[in-house]
Length: 495
Image (cartoon, rainbow, N blue to C red; front, side, top):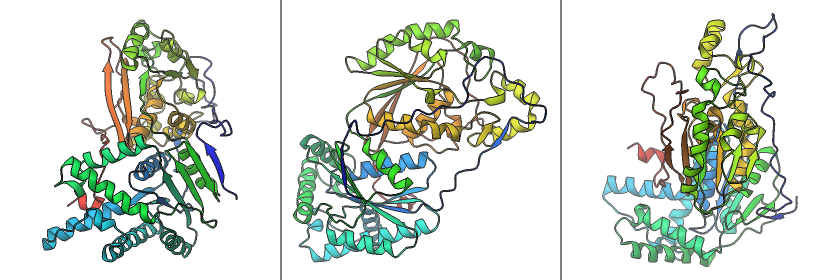
């Protein structure tokens, strides 16, 4: 396959597929199942991804966004239930140096001279670290992992040849190099500033100005020997200025293509993603699930108050509002003075035969299935409807488009916003169905280099509480994510 260069936002990029999320709801009454059918549904098995074994080897100078790309890719694939792990050589270097200092009292000097190609001893140490990291990655893939990301500079043809030769020895493993180039001075300056101001242990005893000078010298040392990918035998993606231009070569296979398409859609422009559930609906008041009921009186009040809150947060910036096709989200968005887009993929989780019923009615009619769903809510699929896992799959095109866009407000439904929220905050599937997304509250997310910051703005308009906590865990807490960068390996963090 010849290399293909595609600019970000090109009309040649196929648009996301807008997939239907189950049958259209025609009324508010639950359909009657056939006499031969008993129960409300069953558990859905996790897809078998065991045959997928991919090594993604990063390539690039320091402060060019390699760790940002590897972290984003990990979050996206984990959200889709692939087993993914980043093996960061810098973390391994710092962890081993820390352990050495604790054990022997010897402090290693990791200033710019350590990264000089003329420093033969340090070069040997750095090569060994990269090789050890790759061996750990390969061992992890053999134990059942799907995608291992080798986060290092891998900046010379000789280093890349070593990686390719090593991976080629493993049956069933494929290799993709992901090169991140950046010639935008503003982006490089921002990355350098982030590096020296975010608690990097390499610079803990330096002033910010000293750290910046040393880091720029480190970059200069790498630049002396840097070789961009041109090897015709390698599978690779080259990303310029985080999504401005993407070059692909020898990308084959379903998962590899999926990885490439996701990375093509990323950008680092400042932006906000806003979430709001629709205003309180009539079914919310009645305790019923699903349906296509209109807003209640309180819900209409929320729809009238929402524009002022959104305008206050957005200011003069452009914003697009996304809704589902169900009337309660469309009514909630009605007064907002922004362009609107309706997505079928944003419709609420389809409750199938339970659509239009209350939880009390479901428990009374289907007690065994009701208990089973409470046991494993993410995997349980309503008969004729969906599970949370099904919703994640149909929301993948929404995630792709969200990553392409700048400021977006999604007026959605509880299950839908839980799935999207879990993506941005990198939360596990087990926690996803229990994330609290209250009515009459706007959630403002600010994507950062290594996570997502959050603010919540509840409006003083009363609404019912539709949140059902996880059974047997009355004081359940969903783990919060952090937008801070990690500098040591997991093993060191536990000590």
